[in-house]
Image (tube, rainbow, N blue to C red; front, top):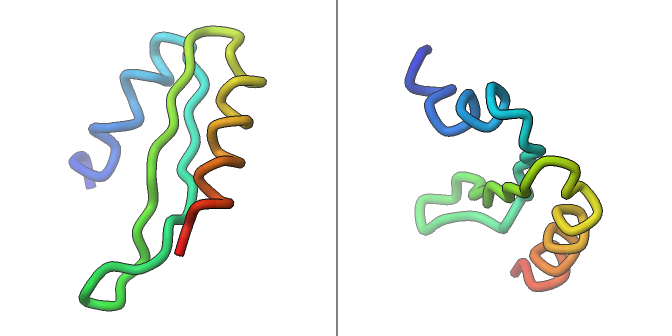
Length: 58
């Protein structure tokens, strides 16, 4: 289970906002997500980037 958190724990410890945005499915039919990170207090930019990704998703 530790390896499931390797990409999220550093952001949490540093206080940087992060989110995962659904981005369609892979060749095997499994869902694909894109992780969006922002600097501290950068939620506005993070949500804007997530919106662009959602609009571009297949």
